[in-house]
Length: 143
Image (cartoon, rainbow, N blue to C red; front, side):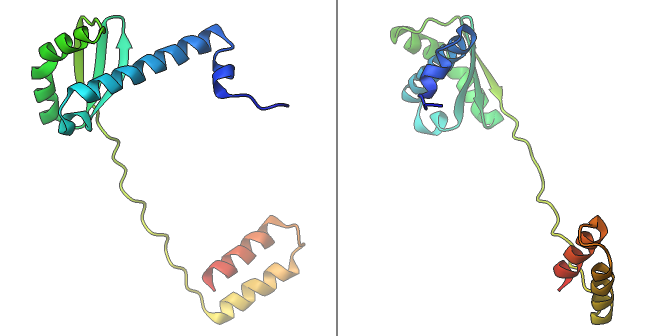
């Protein structure tokens, strides 16, 4: 199979080409938003979607969302000057998913006599036995 660029693959179907065109438009809008906003706002503002004439932006914090909502009218004017006609810009706070760090795995300590007994038991089982494999892994992890 010969290799081809992802653009050829994405442009091959009508649904995929529409998705590619939409993604390209969102990237262009992100660039325009980054140029129009102050640096501290642009770095925390992401273009989420464009539905008809309504642009949806995600920001990192509620405080920044308030400031950006105040700037929406002038942002609409600036975007119109750049050739992007929008009816409205919706600003939403993107809630980051919080996952606490997993607890460290428990340390396993077994006595030498227990370790040798489990090793002997594993050796006495058939080599392809799942129990023998599990016992060998256990003995190795406690070593």
